[in-house]
Picture 1 (cartoon, one colour):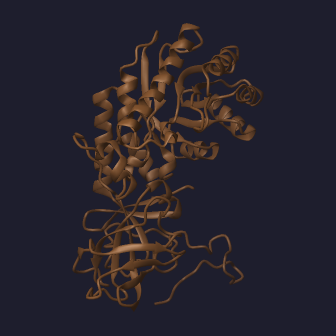
Picture 2: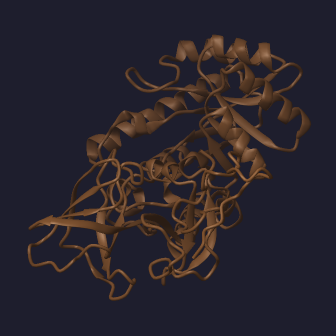
Picture 3: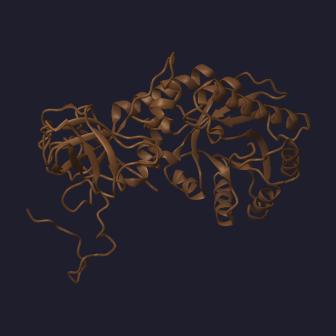
Length: 423
């Protein structure tokens, strides 16, 4: 079989198109896998490959949408987890999200290019070029929603210097000593809110924070710590409302990432303030969930939860070598899988042709190098070079960024769609 690569008129490889975009697609790698491709038995597939299971993704979107409806909260699903338009558009069209969250001006730009109407930059906006770009976008698209944080007088000054005649809505970010970004005291908060209120370009519409930086465990002490943080945010909002510093008819209270959105929701929905409260959570990892960190700490993984998430990401690789008893090597590593929280968790084995799926629960990955996974296995395990090993991953926020393309597959591992990322 001949392989065709793009050539210029002079017969030389075109440097603009020479790098294959789709690393898990065989051949030139210049197009995604066709729909219907059986990824574990097709000669169109290179190993390793990361896949996303459509049924799990759809379940996760439904489950959090139901939670938000039942509790009367808005969702700005954090886009930074996947940065994939094929996933993130579904969070709105199927998952009922008000909009999407971003962490950087570049991510805001990407979300706008994905066609997202409401964007929450859950961070301080201090980069002059980023401020100018966002300000111009809002001026040109006044019907598109935008929110961001402020936590300093200098931050207010930078926004005023670079927004021109544009106007944006901001939330005052609060944190605690040793935490992440955010004001540490209510006196600071009042000073900054007064500066915002005096600005013709800024509108104060809420108070925000990030409870994940508390590093609290899922025990009584951890829950109490998160609740205390939420109460501090509520008390700050009450103080600012008493001083009539909000420019809106309601107060947005925003926190709630992947680990604590249930506790945050219970606190914010119970808050009594001088103005109506709009709770806004910002979970993002839920779309993929995982087989590690979030399977332990996510709210829906706790005893008594009435909703449930499913792990949708899997990494599949082939056995490279069985150099000694009890040890095999698989062809994925740090370039392909997250390793910052847990190593991949073996789920399934298949023969080299994709046949005979069987459990891999007796296997363990003990380490990963750049392109090798150390697979520990019983000495009598018949796994051989070329066979498939499929693993769940831990911490999806560091999984998608390693792949420019993932096939979306059905439960038979046949391609239903193509997911590209924009990191």
